[in-house]
Image (cartoon, rainbow, N blue to C red; front, side):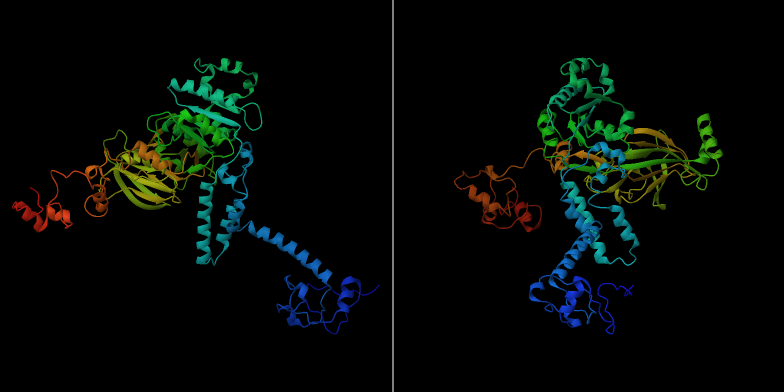
Length: 590
């Protein structure tokens, strides 16, 4: 049995005193060729001409190794190219820049029925999980102790670019289950719901001779205006396609629905957000209410619009920010409570033993976790029926910012900036801006003005133990509860945004112009003798003069010196007004 020489890694120089063992094609090829110098591997022209176009990846320290045969060298180059390709694919999966190019490749969306199996809390976050692995990116940034400013800049720019691409890219997927939410206490909309339901059920889609499944309010099951039996009698297959939803179904199984259609106004859209406290399907809102900041689709064109969205064009989604609001009760404030339910719940929670990490009771802070709500518009804390001014402590990331003395405060989303916050003096905020709008209600200090805060802040509003009275908190105008001394409310940016279907790119500006008449005058200012409006003295006046050629002169006109082009004011300042006041006819008012 012959002795085997120890194997060396590729490119490792062999000892010159150890003879090379001939055997196999590689050894034969190496023995038939003359050795080359070591530095030939580093020179761009050290190889034969026919191999110059192929890069060489061997290590340099091999002065005793002859050049391999061309066919052997070609096989090695092909194997290494395949290995490099696999490595580059693994690297690209972790690189945000390459993720942007991969993002352009994916065009179809997975079925929404698989939502329950996805690990991400939001369907639209997981929808693009194959393009960007956010968790890996965050781990790399956190683990990089020497993150350069250039890489930090490139990462931030790439993240913004991904966000822009997500906003611009339409979602093309099959809509097979449509949920219709109809405004309550409006019988005229029941007939429209029936019309829309019949059209969705009977219009052929996706290669079939039938429509899609439609979910309507369970209260319409016995409605004579809706006429369930008459509708089902038109086609026997409708019995398996017409279904009824309940609030519990929307809360527990939101993945059943591919699209939500609302018939009503902004209140119906807020009710939709209240129904879906976690994952929210895309919401298409028809304007059938009074104002309509959030309802940008005209019901008279519903066939054309739905065919466009459910067809090849797809839908563009605006991910509206929501708040996760949690109430924490003070254990001390619950002890003297007269209600048996509060005492029983407190004693049960305290008798359960020491709290764990997941326990809602924190003995160190003396807080008991209460209700949690997802808010689309705003959270309002006010003094309620109390005649005393509210005293509130505002914290940001557990750091005290200020003590508020006011009738209350409003913590608004960008979507809610056109609601209560606007009436209290808050600013208009575009829904694409991730921010928290803090607006005081009748503050005691005039210097306490509305402000925009970063959305990564965890805001906490607490009632001081020394406060003269309590307060009340409401969530989108619902769930109004009382807060006692020591109670607090924590507000964070929600992991479950509210996706709305966009009708046009600038629909937000159109909505505020239509509903608030933003920057709209009652009448436009008239021009000179029918000329272009806005052209008077100064820039553009020569255009009006050119248009006025051949027009009859004015009975009351400017003075001659002004007509020549002399710069004058309106007659209320300077020497010209004094001269004009003497009635000397030099350009002043007469």
